[in-house]
Length: 167
Length: 270
Picture (cartoon, rainbow over the protein chains, first blue to last red):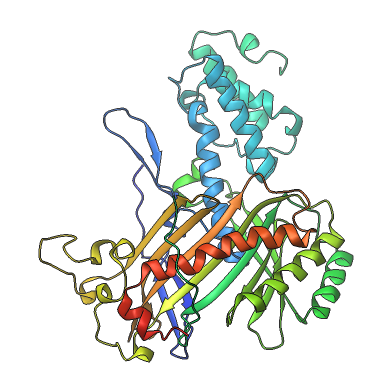
């Protein structure tokens, strides 16, 4: 995914002498990048870490990065109509959804944008089943049920099987 | 991996701009008014009388907002940190639902720093005995300024070792060439390394003063343990002291390893 920075972000560092303050390029907003390898088509994160800090801005930026990574993780198979649907892959989706809710809360798991033609229905159903305890707090959860059913029909699957127990 | 050991020295021109110790723990329900008032009193007694609160919102960066449909508001979350600052402004305890940190802006030595860390940890443990520690970090930010050392025109490669200089190291981009710092608009390097008894997040960067007139060099080393920490770490001073001692041992050695003999002497070791 291409990612352009409008300007170079900076971080301020205090001087140990009386000369003043300094600024440096900052990893803060560069830490959200990933790149797709040509041969394997695998996606790699460009990893940047945040260090020990007591500053709210630094903690917020670290969490923003983790939020980005967590979104990418739960969407990995859900947003790929051609994704494998073996047990390992479905388990990965369920674990990613539960990890996401555990760290950021159910209200951050927005399902508003889910489009039937852009999802893998069995993974989306697994995500919905894993998050069903919080269905009232997850934006777009009910809409996503309909998207799953539509995606199942497009894939020539029975929506009632795919969404068993949820409709 | 190990870092070559050196005899610890204290520099007359101390380059340490910030030293931070942070203990991160599983999220706590800390922020009731009663709790914060109790912490404020406790930290005031420890020499941090001024309380400040900072609240920040954050959301996913633009590149990761695929989960938010057009027209839908992005998901925002909040971080809240309460700071308790010393009267001279050089020391600060920061407390959030997920960490406690001590920051020092005028570090003089371990014997002054360690007791404050232990006291802050004890204050937290007494009020939140269920806090489960997840990560213990000790971070040193050294800012090397040449002007106070009468090294104003000295190229960085005569002061800093190549492993911290990246493309500014001699012969990096062309044989026989050393980049002038005027040709380097910005430089930032980050490595996360496994040492024998800890991790280290090592960052180096060419800094520019806010007025643009000077350059300085940052060596930022955050030594930490994550996972496998003792559940009673915050409340057991000896345990915490031992873990911090192990992290502290690396710090001076890494800085010494990262600078040349010339800079070492110019900083005036005592």
